[in-house]
Length: 100
Picture 1 (cartoon, rainbow, N blue to C red):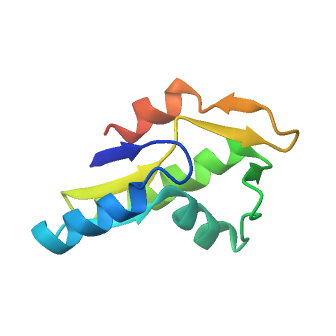
Picture 2: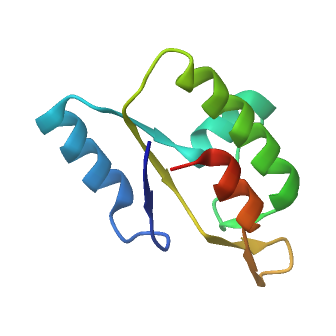
């Protein structure tokens, strides 16, 4: 896994799509993977409830991907805005478990 991170709107998805197009690597969005497993959409205002719990969903989704793919991109964040609009870091343990 190659982890691509940056603030909202910086061009992570665009970059991942270009790499996918040029190199044929699959690209996944952390928020999309979480949404699919939770069966819940994220708010457009970028405020995220349950940031810590969401990382468990992400780890579950990545575990499934790792079963069938060796090389891929993951588009995500090191920090998010919590429900109160405050910057909240994603715990280091999430990245240790992801093993990018």
